[in-house]
Image (cartoon, rainbow, N blue to C red):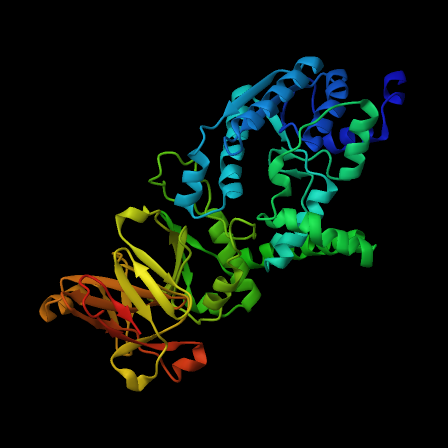
Length: 481
């Protein structure tokens, strides 16, 4: 009892957030060397020892910042653990590895770093038999995350309050503020490291922290309690939707594919349909990446927005409203075919395996060494196809097909058409509704081999008419006008 009386309010809060664990349980603390994780480790070191818990530390050196700064963080964590008599392990990721993964996965550097960091946490926790991984998120992190996801258009699950316990992740500091953390370190005279990237305005979290939150503090002093209450409500809403979607839309799994009757799917309300799709995306595994440097892929997931992965709710909503028959999310593909709604993992393709061009607006574009020109025209300007922006002009994939008014044209059928017409190359033009057209190339010729037929007024669906012609004086290129 005498020992407990010596604990500060911060240490009591951290111990309460830790929860109850049997004696001899190993706990892995993820420590970056920054203020929050340093305070967590110090605050829990003595209470954990008193309760017979085996506290371990893991520091992940990402290889993103300068070698001097990165090594300084690692040495500071080692020194802190030595002073607290806590076993410490440092895992270093070779410089450039995370950047390559970010490029191949089409995520931001921070998102790729998170993949490696979580993979390292789980491997180390398995190695030492840890009952939990301790992460030093504070109340400020919770509020920043909710603000980020709100601005990105997340649904109830994304806006739900960050829990103290989720799986093997435990957040002991989630009920304390960053200011309390800094005050605790100052009172104890404990040094901590400052990450230079925390001031980089390129990251959304930093802009929210440095610009938006000070404005909220000045003009809306009670915003924190209001946002926390809203997040708690969204957590209840998300739990209800999860249960209802699982009950009303029962998916059937066959191998890597999940499917449900189209009639059953569209009989439910729109928000239930959206949630059902998110549940499957959160459940199916990614196909193995062809990136040898990538960490384990885990699950596809598309539920929550992040600064690295733009939210996909808008795209999934289009599919839920039957505004498109095929939705390619990259990591997964959703199809409305043959009386079934089918979800299957996407395949990771290397950029060098083929080519692709993203067209967001009219202008001059380059496709490798050729010129591609896009001009939004009218129906009278020539042969073409209807499509929406953004438009992707890319290689033809094996699963590509085009829906006409009469039937579905498979890639085999399109290839046969192209062969008879003398075209030696094919590219696909894809928008948010699926493949809009497959275009044949041969020498100085380019033409639409197969086009999607649009019922009613295509312009009501937000589509434009694109006409085709081959660039004058070019070979191997394509003009989309």
